[in-house]
Image 1 (cartoon, one colour):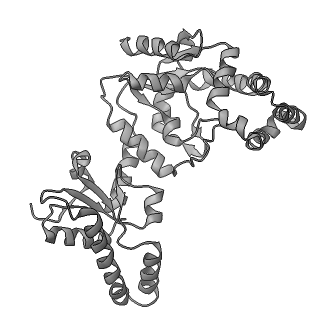
Image 2 (tube, one colour; image 1 turned 120 degrees about the vertical axis):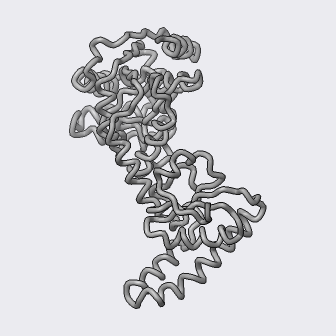
Image 3 (cartoon, rainbow, N blue to C red; image 1 turned 135 degrees about the horizontal axis):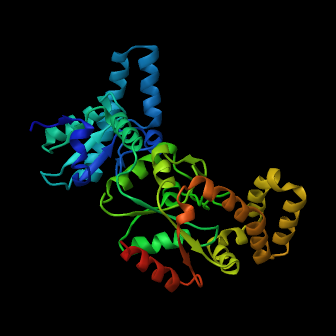
Length: 352
């Protein structure tokens, strides 16, 4: 094969996990929105340089833009060779891509191939990858699903974590979305990814599953924070067999106080999130909840929010949205210890 080789995404997919490096040469802002799995960002033009070259291209002509851009590209590629790749062996195998047109990735691929490395340039760039992901997510996933249901605080996420450690196939959408899926679900100091990055992470997870083995997933809503679950995946989840976790409200309060400890440390943030429920519960009730926060009565607050908001909302939606919930396997948990979830996870993982 002559290098740099220009290959389609279909051609590189089978070896996507075997490249020594996947190099995204787009600007940092483009990379931040989304990129191929495990890619590193080595921009041949940073955001400011790309804006400068683009302005020349649009308002003068392509020739003048290339004269200004070429030294920038050469200097940037030289920097990466000196600082990142100088110690790489002759058989170091990299995939290189840009947005779509191939000018930026082609420049780097040409230089690295001239050095002697067997580099691949992705034909169609990031756009080709996104088209593939969109097409894949428009179809229902191949494996069978088992949906973990349960009221807020029953430990669905804890169960998924233990199942994963035992080797079960788990699709944790809340982890991929960086959000716990409720009005209080925002994770501190962890912004949600873009919609495209979320979809890419789902695709990456799904493609690694064994189609002959069950995938465990939580009974999510269509929207997790600001992100939408792909429709075909959501439809598959809603038509799948269910597990219904049961845990006493007292234990659920204890679990939530553990999992949402950041709110007890930042009461103003908790009040702001509860204010999102004003239209549902009115100022009087939200005011009472604020007063419980001010007097550090967190267990009572959690008890009331569960009784007045989360539990009624769950009961209204679960039967309507998950067709097989009424036939769910009921699993009663005696407590929130690690041993309780481990014992249940072992039973579920061994079940046919």
